[in-house]
Length: 159
Image 1 (cartoon, helix red, strand yellow):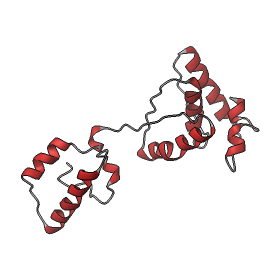
Image 2 (image 1 turned 180 degrees about the horizontal axis):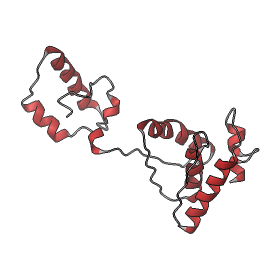
Image 3 (image 1 turned 45 degrees about the horizontal axis):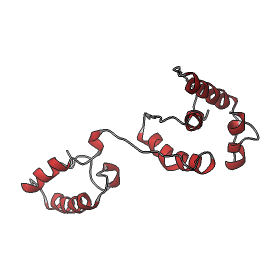
Image 4 (image 1 turned 90 degrees about the horizontal axis):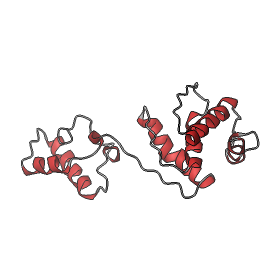
């Protein structure tokens, strides 16, 4: 792990302003050992320790398929949009990652089509949103709610 997290490691050479953190190195070593020995680990570390990379780098090095569950969508987005691309570029070019969310984050096509058959809209504004929503539903590859930040959370077609 020194090769990655050490003062002269890969991360230090690739990340502008990288700060060596003993706690991050120790956690990464513990995580890697758990992958090797197939034993569980419960780790706790303060903000700014570098926990995300301390579990992602050993996970990548293990060569195993890994599930990472985040407590917030913000952390999920950080991992997918920033950490994974960086680690793919600098640690493992063959790294693959996918995002899985709870079913409420995706459009239910069956319920949507039922609603389209007999839409109940209460205002002109709602009708305009519905037309825009229909266009999105017809073109979206994933049906992921996060693609449509313009849609109000209480939009009845979604719920």
